[in-house]
Amino acid sequence: MKLSELLKNVKTDSAYTDCEVSDITDKSNEITKACVFVCIKGNHFDGHSVAKQAEEMGAAAVIAEHDTGVKNQIIVESTRDAYSRICAAFYGNPAQKLKLIGVTGTNGKTTTTFLIKNIFDKLSIKSGLIGTVKNITGDKEYTSSLTTPDSKELQRLYAEMVDSGCKYCIMEVSSQALAQGRVDGCHFDIALFTNLTQDHLDYHGTFENYARAKRKLFEICDTAVINADDEYAHVMVDSLPCKVYTFGVKTDNTDFSAKNVKCFSDSVQYELLTPDNIGRINIKIPGRFTVYNSMGAAVCAVLAGADFDSVISAVSQSKGVPGRVEVVDTDTDYTVLIDYAHSPDGLENVISSLRETTDGRIITVFGCGGDRDRTKRPKMGKIVGDLADIAVVTSDNPRSEDPELIVKDVLEGMKSCKAQIKTLVNRTEAIKYAMSIAKAGDVVLLAGKGHETYQILNTGKIHYDEREVVADILKGKI
Image 1 (tube, rainbow, N blue to C red):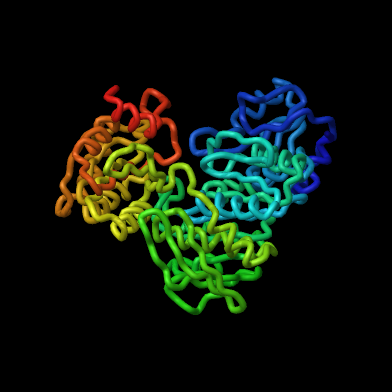
Image 2 (spheres, rainbow, N blue to C red):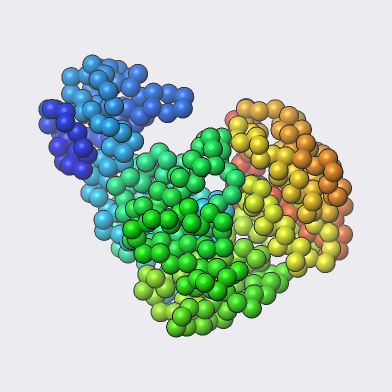
């Protein structure tokens, strides 16, 4: 591919030598002969520092934000934006051949995208999926490493979806991806906002920056679907030029609303109302938050042109998502649930929902991730301490931090809580303890890991699947 073809949608005043390009990359360890190297400044490394090295290694051109001394360089205002756009061009602008549905928010992204995918599958609408748990390109599935992939991988997935005959791509769009320009140049047919609560402040710095990053999605879409019950709904949609549709449970002043909500231990039921239709949904995913997730999914499908009654039927047939209020097969008189809740709001939602349908005690095993926002640790501790009957504080993904110190941060918020508190830093020991004290009718909630099958320690990533841990405990292997 010619360099000039890659740069068609990139703004630059630079004079450059056109040439054949073999590849594109923003990673210094992936520089190859005849590639284009894009200099991106990150938190720990600035690609501009190796621009000359890239030239010496045979790079055909370098894209930078300032002069690097390289002969064939293209100066742009934002290399992140440029990288996203040349990645799209490199793969033939595949997103233009798909209808994109993006979901953003603190909680509910994964479940909502899975539900939209389930609806489309039931209605024989071929679609791809991109998100936290896995990526599906129609006929192939890949393990996911990021909620929203980097620009090159994202465009490759789009291209594979097009090749497999997908009409839609349904994807989670994270705040980091929006802030880093990974979806720059993409345009979304529908964008959905789930909710906004404290998370990722270690990256964004302030809650305002976090909210501003989320809002970017609605500036590049045709139709916005907004959870009107969330207090930050107005932040997402104020002065937007696109069409806006709202949904909610707490108010009648929405385009789509849920009435007669009933929560059970294994499901939720409600009536979905529009100005023209009413349908009864009975979905086998417990938790009041399931009402919002399934409503959002149904609204997106209807706005995409699907028949209302068919959507209602498809939603009611949908199953759960790995690591989201997932029931572990234990054959015991108590229940073990695995959930990805790793933020204050996520924990409050899942424990509060369990309280509505649980006759016994709620025993919550949880921890907080290392190298992440420390301010949410005592908040998470207080929420679990106030809402659970027994709180077992343990390790999550400590990364480079001392897990003992992370636990101390959590305990700061639990000094006057009603729950019985137990501290076991070793996560396996914590799970074993929780199961050992569980009685008939109790729920053991393993919070934080969800779909993850690993744990990140200061020595690196290790295999850690809580389903396997639970099974080994029951077999007496641990």
